[in-house]
Length: 303
Length: 246
Image 1 (cartoon, rainbow over the protein chains, first blue to last red):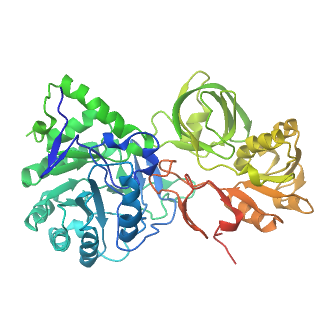
Image 2 (cartoon, one colour):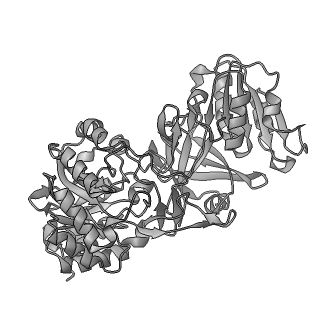
């Protein structure tokens, strides 16, 4: 019998499949379709201190084997996520959650992690230091080792749950950022966030997205994500949640061989709302085909 | 929402850049004013397209070829299969129509009014249908609405067919209990201002998922942020925040 269980630190997940932040809302739309408890966990929509409307529309564009998004961290704010969205989700999902926290200052990271400290349903914090959509209000923490380090220290100063840092691929050397996060006390690494891209409307001769640029995700970015997970696995000792273009059970195995202990599935949810369930159901068959008894043992197997 | 495979049974060109595709499949969850999300070969995101009609295992969609996706759809052959998400969006609220509802459509906003009109007539209501187009070569579905038994008037902006002018011109002097509208944003705003009753309007936006997960199509309303795909596409006149509000 194929053992799909994996570990992130002390936390054992039934399987490595986690819907990625921003592609699954707070689970409600998907709970109408299938029992969410088949999933390993759920990464919640990126949360900030204050409610945010996000960017003007159009926020979405199609691309070859992928998509651009510039949603701009639309969310109701940490208080409402904790008081309304998480309790609602807990009615239909009984496993620990991944709380994705974004921020525009060190104080905001510290504030959100403090606010979430007593919420027992949160398994880990996923620190978004890399959202490339947001240019208002300050620098992008994730593009330098110093910036990443500052964000991690701020979060760790108040967080009660393990802090995983979600890295941006839009950097010269992702391993130096990952190492800085490890030295600053991070408990794990998530990668990759989206790659900055653009599409231009031939009729209007203007960028399609109102924000001009957006984050590229979908199958197109899978090879980039695999390479970066592979490199970061060599650079740090922390557990890695791998993401970027995963849409099949085979992709999950490939990402784990590169160095991931668990994975997130993002853009694919928007095209096939059943994709995470389908991947979980398919995993034992794929494991069997490649003679994998315990999924957790293949992490980093490509090295 | 339901995911299922449909087969194409007919494709025809209705007017300039406007096509009608008829599909067979499970239409059990489709209500007037809803849309379907069509997966196309070699395109990543699905394409949201409003439902023109759905009955007896037959789905009709009418769309304008505005980009590569809709162009590809128009070139597909009878017998080809398409993966659809159906039953998306809130749809029109038929319970508010009163006895004499007014249906106002512009261009590619006309199709969703067809199923609405058919259902209203089935419920014993007497709808009046006003259709607006830019020019004669873009006019479609006048005959189809007449065949349902509705009173129909057509306006073209250049006067090449029907009454010259915008569709709002046809609204003057009309007596109606409620209105339903779909069309381009400037038309919807003009219709909303010209209307003498309450009513509801259907909007469009570029979408990611089409079922409320990605927040790709959020708009501000007087009753809070709404996702066009899930909380819409139909909004009540009283809750809409127009971009050019005076």
